[in-house]
Image (tube, rainbow, N blue to C red; front, side, top):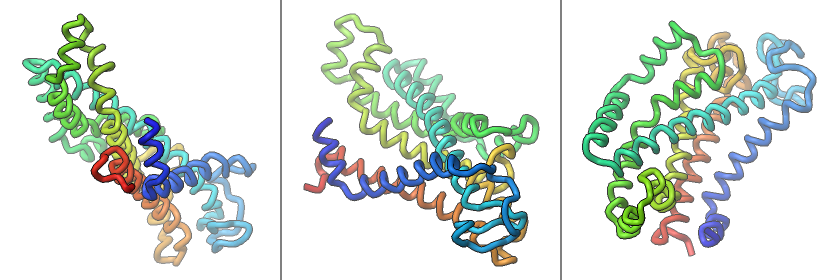
Length: 279
């Protein structure tokens, strides 16, 4: 573990990506604490450009775009954490069980994975939104997580199949340990780096999925998010009115977060793989 930390701190991709993510996270957590009005309150002159008082300008209704951006970062990280976490738990559980047990259990779980994999996730979410509605970020994250796990299950299953025949797993089986205990103690720790990289990809995927849903008007309307900011900007003709400060910050924010996660993922792959390490 110390070796990985040493090389992680020496890897520019890991340090740079983590710094960007940390900066956005701190901005989302701290900035809203220093204001006495909400992100949707009318606090300034309409369509004001960026200034010392309103750093990112205001909307056509006089709303503070910087405050909306900071609150939108909270929703972005929350949906990434919850959506990616749900997908990781479901996908890894199914992959571990299918890969270790094999036989009819493997076939049944593979069938379930293939069914969810071929479902048109966006179309299903549109239908669910029409009949149920997505009124909160946790609900959106739940829907995203339940449709994002199939590729994780397949990847973890393949890794588990290659590990279950190893000598240390046979020894654990002969000692009388239960299958779930063997998976938790013997198989999962040997895949820890791979599982971490998988979660980072799920995090970024959830952020992009949520931004897409928000942009087309299928996200939660009771909160503010970066995707919803872009949706509002398009809806109220910010591009035609020349209000670039309304749609550029959320677009750059989403791009920077997802890009930083990808760069950090590449860097961690170099850290965990001795052949790719920068000495």
